Amino acid sequence: MLIKIKAVGICGTDIHAWGGNQPFFSYPRVLGHEICGEIIGLGKNILNLKSGQQVAVIPYVACRHCPACLSGRTNCCENISVIGVHRDGGFSEYLCVPVNNLLVVDDVDPEAVALIEPFAISAHAVRRAAIQPGDQVLVVGAGPIGLGAAAIAKADGAQVVVADTSPARRDHVAQHLGLTTLDPSDPLFTEQLSATFDGSLAQKVIDATGNQQAMNNTVNLIRHGGSIIFVGLFKGELQFSDPEFHKKETTMMGSRNATEEDFAKVGRLMTEGKVTARMMLTHRYDFKSLAEILRKRRD
Image (cartoon, rainbow, N blue to C red):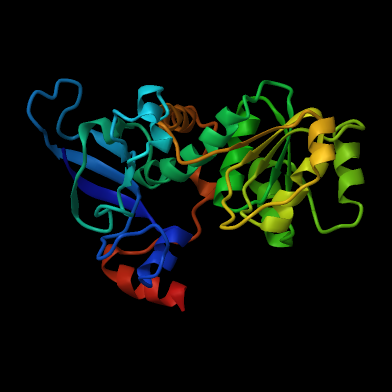
């Protein structure tokens, strides 16, 4: 499928990758994996799409035949290829995309559609947590993925608390989501968390920091029978108390990428107005200034 790019997001990964030394990338590479486009060219025998439709690009191209894919977990395909990482992406005027990697989202602003991808990462973490209405959830880290996880968990009916060491990020969460925020560097953080959750620790913790110390500490933030989901990645080893882990019968899992189901959920939440892109957007740039912007951001 050939699409014309309407909007594309710039994330931290793109800025680091632009310098040419980002792990997991293959070079040379056209970057850009947060993409909104318009279909302008159809492949053969395509019945469910048509020219002129607005689409979000699902950048995770799965092989569809490994054990993970056959079990429906295309997000952790053994042979995964990511648009903007392993194959050329959306920092271009036009892009060819496999038909299975397009989601039609007609009634949402293109800027928001481009941001379905990071929200889908968050949505996958929330789905891994199996959050139910009334669950008491702690999100650690209020960057884009943590912010999205908090918004989606709230939309799913959870009681959400967000922890971040940055006062500016805590203010941002309070302003855009109206959620309780805490400072995890405060010596009384655990006591404050327990007080917020009626005397208990968190039922579920979603860590979006990728910070070793924060991730090591998550086992101390959940109640007995609780769950920990690591959506942030630390490129090293983690260490925590095994007696504490076992005593609480902790469920611990990773969350990687997102599936078509997660993209569809975010598209639906955006259409319903339950999740908005305003909380993610900080700047807008003309496409012609892209190289200069990436250079400035990198430096």
